[in-house]
Length: 100
Image (cartoon, rainbow, N blue to C red):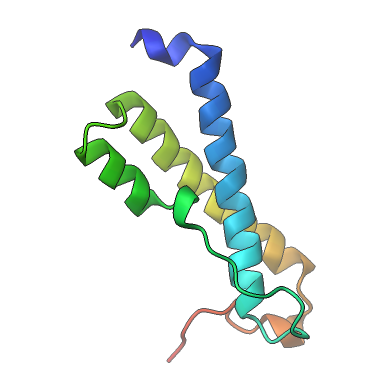
């Protein structure tokens, strides 16, 4: 629990939040039918699956993994919200998600 009081921990959590926000914003934005200007975006380093893999491999402490996961989920939600707000309605559709 001492780790939760360190500034390095909170800097790392903030970095995960910002990385996840940008991944959602650019990743989902790249899948929309804009003019082809964004290209392919890879988010392998800000992905909850990667965080879980590092936790299972004992490369990440439990408090840090939980902090990263929360930051990644919140970052994704914030990124999707920003993308929704800046995308014109006719382009927005389902924000690149499959729909029935």
